[in-house]
Image (tube, rainbow, N blue to C red; front, top):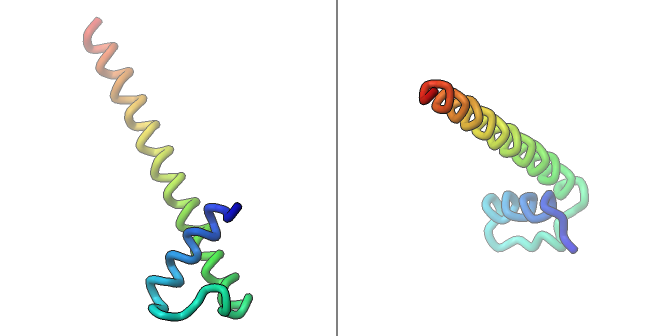
Length: 67
């Protein structure tokens, strides 16, 4: 099974390199795109966690205001 990192790396590569095959790309280039993918995934997770934390704070404020 292809990992999430690999999917994102391929998507980034495809966005920059129309017509070039990921499978024939040298490993050092693939590794560079995998680094970008890991960074993007980490940022996405961080933003999701912030949204969840903010939603939790707003819910607790709503509950306390209703009391």
